[in-house]
Image 1 (cartoon, rainbow, N blue to C red):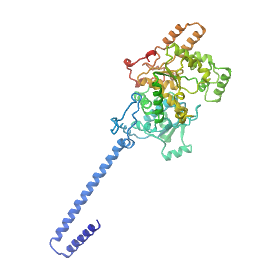
Image 2: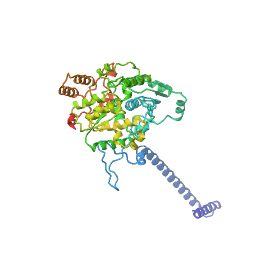
Image 3: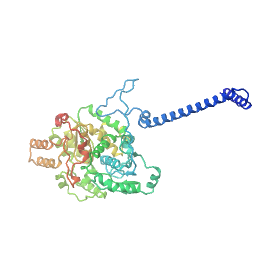
Image 4: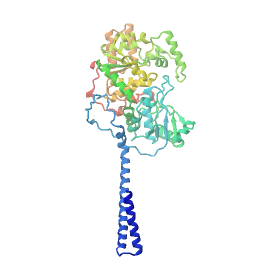
Amino acid sequence: MCSIEGKGKGKMRGIRMGATKGGGGGGGERVEKLKSSRTKLWMIRATTSVLLWTCIVQLTALGDTWGPHLLKGWPSCFSYQDSSVSVVEDKVPSVPARVLPPKRVYKNNGYLMVSCNGGLNQMRAAICDMVTIARYLNVTLIVPELDKTSFWSDPSEFQDIFDVDHFIMSLRDEVRILKELPPRLKRRVEIGMVYSMPPISWSDISYYHNQILPLIKKYKVVHLNKTDTRLANNGQPLEIQKLRCRVNFSALRFTSQIEELGKRVVKLLRQNGPFIVLHLRYEMDMLAFSGCTQGCNSEEVEELTRMRYAYPWWKEKIINSDLKRKDGFCPLTPEETALILRALDIDNSYQIYIAAGEIYGGQRRMATLAAAYPKLVRKETLLEPSDLGFFQNHSSQMAALDYLVSLESDIFIPTYDGNMAKVVEGHRRFLGFKQTILLERRLLVDLIDQYNSGTLSWYEFSDAVNESQESRKGQPTQRLVIPDRPKEEDYFYANPEECLQPSYSRLDLSVGGL
């Protein structure tokens, strides 16, 4: 390169000298030709540069859609409907890469921070609502903060339970979601310069447009410090209801660690035949909160009462347990549950997976149920301690595992209509109206009392129990609407009717259909 460059320079010097001295008539022509060739060369270079920059811009735009897949490789192919995907060695999988939705472009009105309250499923529903609200206010949502101060004192962050990257990317055509505020706004929040408030419960979307959006525009960042039941069940535009479902059934995916462990538990259960998930909500926190003490001794009653008074945000303190039970507001006891399962003709050879925390009263209270159904199992009995070590003291992650197993069960039976029971019920409806036995507790406890007193024979009791449950097996039904009394109407996430496609021909709603 150096020698060629040197020869070129010598030639150029010779041309310039000849032209100056007037030596030879062809010197002028050579100069003109050289100028012409240099102009052409410049034009070629300029044209090439324009073409190259155009290609770079186009590739950058395509990179937003295809880049993440090229970098991250194949997406997870695990699904509960078909978990037996095999890959032939040395062959590319036939499953196509999932194309990310395009980013939604809109004028950002500000930033919304939210702090969820309650247990896992209460927070899950709230997250769905907050995403929907952020989308229709055209604001940027910061990844929700989970409750760490509730009864369970779970330190888990959002990314410890849910696949945060999937959550953000799968919704990018609807709403912009960030893991944290931009630095300038983050510093303001850290020194306490943030407008924080609880929104009004059971509000429709117009409340957020008229009351919350002006605050966001004024302060740039608004923090909603309570999120449960802040969006009305009914009377919302169809697109809002559909987005709530999309977040719940698609965007909120558990971490790969939780998903894989859930798959292993289901596999272990399936190896031994059909299984039922019993959400036995007879736990200390529920009994203390509700004031339900059926079957408890005097020491236990005192302990539960002390606990209720220890939590000032539990507003109801003086509770008549007997009256509350007769009104159907108490979870069934393990003894009552055993009686109902027998009356429903649940075969005692079926496995019954207990989806719950520690049962209050321990083995003493579980003895009747264990005698009636000897194949009682829990995650703790199916897995090794090392498998669950990571989840210890993380109640929400344990609840996530129970949630996955509940979705896959042949029958799901909750003994109380708490948040998990409702959200799992709705998810099983979405998966094809999988059988869920929704116990009518008010009627059942009356039947139990009549049977125990000898008023009803076993056959009369069993017939009455089955008759009471005939229309309460998770089949398609219209969601109950009670104007001006939203707390008493059917919960949206228990029956997201707008998102379901009934197919009666696929239903098998008989208890003995296992």
